[in-house]
Image 1: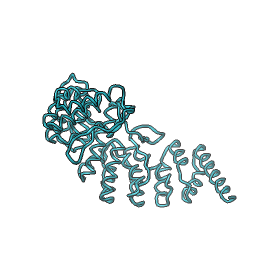
Image 2: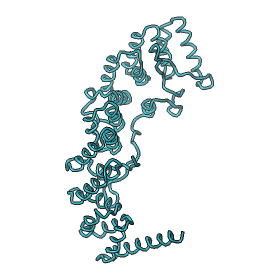
Image 3: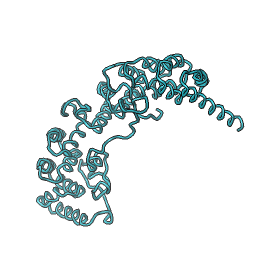
Image 4: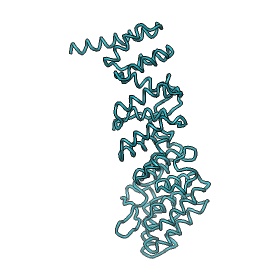
Amino acid sequence: MKSRQAVAPKWGNGSVECVDVRHIAASAIPTLFVCFMLGFLNPVCGLAFQGPPSQGNPQDGAVVPVSLGPDDLPEGQEEKLAAIEAAANGRDRRELQRHLQDVEAAVQAAAFDALSAENAPSAVQDLLAIVSDTNHPTRWQALWLLDHALQADQRVVLAALREALKDPDPVVSDYAQGALAARQEADALPGNIGSPETDSQLTRLAGGYAAASGGDYQALRYYLQDIDAAVQATAFDALAGHDAGAAVRDLLANIKDSTNPARCQALQLLDESAQADRATVLAALIDSLADSDPSLGDYALQALARRAEPEGMSALIQAFQNKDAVTRLTIIDAIGLTDAGVQFLREALLDSDERVRTAAQTRLKQTAEAAGRTDQQ
């Protein structure tokens, strides 16, 4: 699929109330949470090691700490890991429990691994106790470890994540929300999963990816109506991967739905989609010219001007004549320099507004100069 610029409706950009939205706004989520959600830790996140705090051993289900050399460890961490190894060898459970409360994720993961090797259910209960302690500084870190622990019963993990949704600490509740969305635990989330009113963009994106991987096409159609362009595009790509024709029809239905706040960005998504055939896109753009939503009509006008295809020129000319001079100037600037577009500019030389006539003359002159340079080459 060709690259696409996402848009959000109702933001001013000249005469068209659609603007680019190219960046995912995850800044509201604490840096540590983003690092863990991405599946890695980095010194820039304020932690002392790279790689996830633990990784599964496919042979015995244990969680083992990331292997690091002495030079990679911060001051004091090497001693802590050595103490954990000694406590594990000596079966000193109390010492391992003490290290399980460490603020350094690598140390906490190593202690959990050692405790699990001796008694996995008991180690999980120790971790749950930390998550439940509202005064503990590593609660969300412990929740992450629990969420990724192969030793933990998934029913226990889900119960802990659901309970964490109500936690007063936003870092803990945000992590639980994202983790449940990734697991497609829709019933556990407040409100509707993926709702812009209750869920962050990161949560909705995670839900979209989970729906795609699970083949939940009903959920994907729900996300296709999202007001966030990135979430909507993710849902469309997933639906198109399964059935491109059906995905295009779903997008057309969203464009025609006058109650849908994401209509303008849906129209741009269709316009720039490699899955939609040319005739379908042109028909949708022409239909949108007469829409009661001015942002939709203005986008369609500029899109038709940019394409400058013969099939759309008649509708474009008619709409052009009914627009104010400022909008007509915008169309002159946007018109594609196809044969039909050049003919359009020539007709604009007769416009009643001098500014429009001058703009059309300038564009034609630029076209002639460009053609002359091409001939010389």
